[in-house]
Length: 420
Image (cartoon, rainbow, N blue to C red; front, side, top):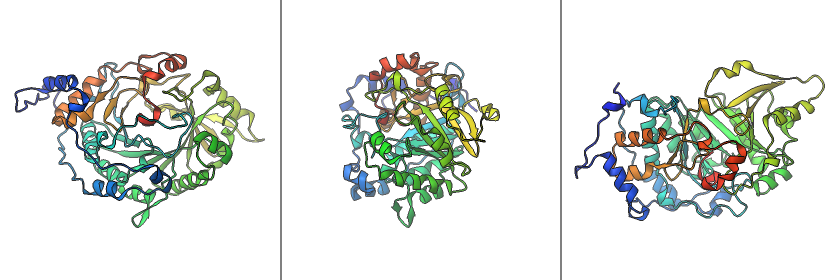
């Protein structure tokens, strides 16, 4: 295994090395950087119907697979200055979504979505994942926007699952499209066949009226999501979680209902403290802290029900979740705002436009897309990742608690453009 200091500095035809290449790329205006024009993505009608344009689907199917190296890279490439090793890669596939969840984006949607040609292609996504896997990343999650809006999702999932070193491939989705027909079967079944190992489904209410108010979409859509969750649970090899963002006065009275809905099914339910992002109307008054969630659950217990903590689940130093049990239900709480877990962070995010974000809350990013499209080698790409990790803050992107994050939320992206 080669040490980081021994990584080759790739000499380009003009005699420049990566440092000069990166500096030149940074100094040029974005419009002058090389771009590969891709077919347009689906429009709004496609979001509703679950269909995509034939042009986009044909382009995705025709794209040649990249020739990827299998040579191992130094694991030190994924270590930051605090000694945290980043073995968990989250890849956003699209900035578009077929819901308008109030904690994620404004009612009118997001006007500054990246044009299709500026997003990573399937081949570029696979190459980024390959470099991370060769440096020791073992877990990959595909996010969005809504990742099922990409018609090449199954192909991307299969390509990443086949990478040496990748042990698990997950997807975070609202579930609306999981049961749509794709070829001979449903999208969900095809994803499982391609190597999908886990699904996180975003669902914030079990009440159709509340669901409509929170998602700004028809309440009848809720039934499609519930059927998708149950279909995921029916796959014995698939780890299924339901993620619920809890907001005071909106859905904080439904925690026990969530627990009972999937008790005994193997589905894990996680309650998430509401986090501030650009234009998501976050307020401290609507934040339901971890202790308040526990209090609400305890106050709604039926006779004979018992809520207890699972101490054995604290063994994983990278787990973001505090696990509890309520009868046959396994419940988790993600306490990003009131009790952070940054010390054990092993995650990095690559947005749909190829920006590497070392922290969900940080405004700093490095464009891996521009490195890729500038002709860089895998060693160059790995060096860019390592350099970005050396600038990662210890917690919350260099900000303080929830109130401080809210003050700086405008410096970050909309949540839908980061990836869940």
